[in-house]
View 1: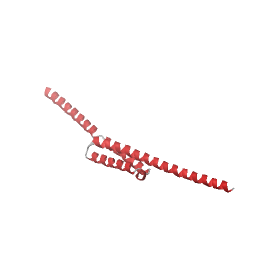
View 2: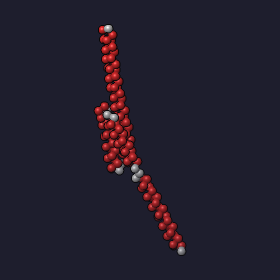
View 3: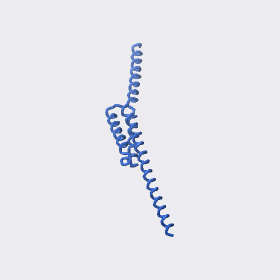
View 4: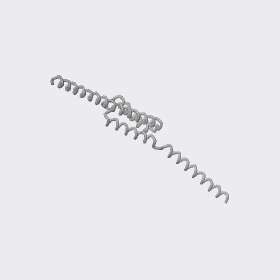
Length: 130
């Protein structure tokens, strides 16, 4: 009877250890790098759509490079590096997008100023002829 009780306890202990090991393995294989990479990809796409390749090519190239390196690190099962590179790619893509927006805003402001200058000159000419 005692042997059955000991065997039962050993079985329960082994089962518990197996469950803990499986839980640890599931935690270790969490999709954090994949989520970070998805966020970075989305940021790169937004930056591309905002005109960053034209107006912020250096920042855009850095973001793309870090995203590619993050994907390679994830494929190599290097979670820490993949996560860090993905986060950096996200920030770099946001910088590229902001730089592109700033450049486009400045260009629009310069065009507006030029239009206003042309209107002032036209107004002066018409008031001088009258």
